[in-house]
Length: 74
View 1 (cartoon, one colour):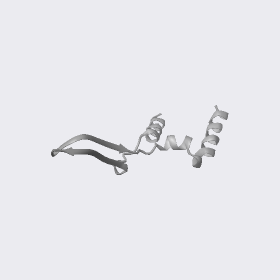
View 2 (cartoon, one colour):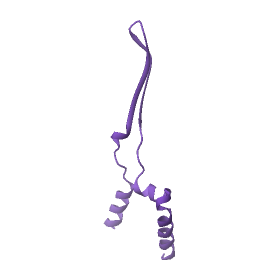
View 3 (cartoon, one colour):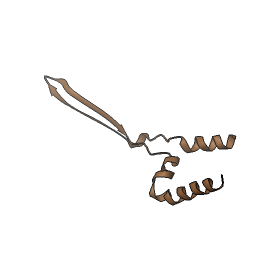
View 4 (cartoon, helix red, strand yellow):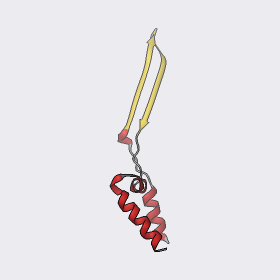
């Protein structure tokens, strides 16, 4: 039981991706004051292995065969 919980935990955790973040700020300066300041901070996080396993083409056949194997043996 502990193995199953550990495997599920490892497959569903996401990885920190601080190096994939971008910060941008735009604004206007009028009379030495910043007006219309717009800041944006966008990070792109990669999906966990569990999500990639079911959704990417690289793993699609493996995911299908795993699902069918489990379904057949239940």
